[in-house]
Picture 1 (tube, each protein chain N blue to C red):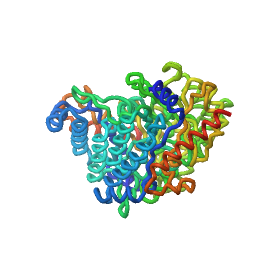
Picture 2 (picture 1 turned 90 degrees about the horizontal axis):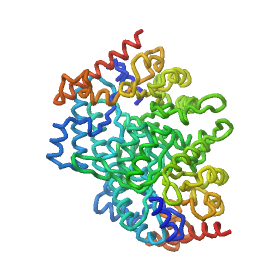
Picture 3 (picture 1 turned 60 degrees about the vertical axis):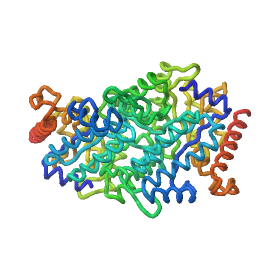
Amino acid sequence: MINKLIEKIKATNAPIVVGLDPMLSYVPEHVQKKAFAEYGETLEGAAEAIWQFNKAIVDATYDLIPAVKPQVAMYEQFGVPGMAAYEKTVSYCQEKGLVVIGDVKRGDIGSTSEAYAVGHLGHVQVGSKSYAGFHEDFATVNPYLGSDGVKPFIKVCKEEKKGLFILVKTSNPSSGEFQDRLIDGRPLYEWVGEQVAVWGEEHMGDSYSYIGAVVGATYPKMGKVLRSIMPKAYILVPGYGAQGGQGKDLVHFFNEDGLGAIVNSSRGIIAAYKQEKYASFGAENFADASRQAVVDMVTDISTALEK
Amino acid sequence: MINKLIEKIKATNAPIVVGLDPMLSYVPEHVQKKAFAEYGETLEGAAEAIWQFNKAIVDATYDLIPAVKPQVAMYEQFGVPGMAAYEKTVSYCQEKGLVVIGDVKRGDIGSTSEAYAVGHLGHVQVGSKSYAGFHEDFATVNPYLGSDGVKPFIKVCKEEKKGLFILVKTSNPSSGEFQDRLIDGRPLYEWVGEQVAVWGEEHMGDSYSYIGAVVGATYPKMGKVLRSIMPKAYILVPGYGAQGGQGKDLVHFFNEDGLGAIVNSSRGIIAAYKQEKYASFGAENFADASRQAVVDMVTDISTALEK
């Protein structure tokens, strides 16, 4: 799957991923109204609204981008109907040829991580049959529990040709509270990054590993260090746009080959129509605003990389 | 909710929690067959099988125990139907008067943690109505992202009178890889424990905080240290039984008042009928075997605490 992701990045010339994190407040009123008319103001109604919102954005952007990253929390908040909308979104994006990164940040003791890995990246056995529950192409994983929390994911990735992005340095303001603490003179995130590199070397695609890392756009200096610690790891970079990251901050997340990083924007793209910059599209044309925001984001990053 | 949990622990005299982690391989064949006859060998069939399995165990044990801890991964592996079985299990246990600890180990950047908190412990707004998606009483939370990943959970707990158990030192063999690394001479898990104590002091129930911690039974010495670092935090202790922890290892997780810890057993109770010790019950009477395993576990822990 890392090979497919890289092919798609080259084909679109867009090292970006659209974060499908549909808060209900991002969904234009006309989309909400239509969903509520059919299902009522229920969890099913909310799930329908976010699904229709996602579908319109995917339809308007899929030819420009290699991948999407649905954040499962935004679906999980709507209970079981929300999880159904998540699965439907994953399926639809895959039908459109997109690589789907499930931003699930799971991680537990071995036997439990195995169940998560099976549910999100693999197949579960039911009697004589097997099923893929949520079937994302990549998943994000939390490393706090150490190797035996991560290895079951790696095992399933190997069997299913899927991939991981392991949290190394997250984009949020308080990520440093534990991640930046010094251990033998080096911050925890570097130790986690080294471990990602070790896991990654054993699980290579053609030019990059299918074990990648998450490093926030909001910490460009740390990104530069982590880039050198994990040369073969693809870096998923959240924090662009709404969280404050800009194209010029991102150059050092990439390798000399122009590859090695994929930058996520969520709000900045899916709720673009709410920004002054794209207000002329109007709420009716929210998906067109998202398309324009994708074009602008690709230009911003390409320009920075060319310099 | 911490007050209710403590009341129930006192009333049952059982500082234990039954881990409802239904691997399909634990579910006796007759239960699976019946579910598959109705729904086929499908995800719905698997979800029905684990739900019926859970229901029988809850019916056989609810009068002896204060709480259950369903591990969401075991449901998530069966996709959307699995999540529906999870929600049904949470509801049923609450109807039976049990406190439900959702072992979800979620944690993300602020806005995303907020969605998780809303989905698992709170209410989500849909138009003019609000809904509780999975409505557990407590949730487990991963601290790797720092304060702004945890605070949205605390906020919802305050509003909803719910509680948290934050991962401090997990029970698995490789938990030490990052958690035991020394920072200014002290292991990371102690720093996390101190932070839990700080959060906890600001969010007190009557005698204990509603911000608790997870510390594995497999690390009794560390449990003793963490007990003193977090005197007002309830400690959720996984790793008893199948993972190797025994009653005698657990004494120092408790305070002088005989409170302060709640010990989880999953496989050891729900799959008791598979152990030689309880084999005489037979697979048909798996729930009776679970009841006996609960009685034995309570005796083991009580005896150790009395000494």
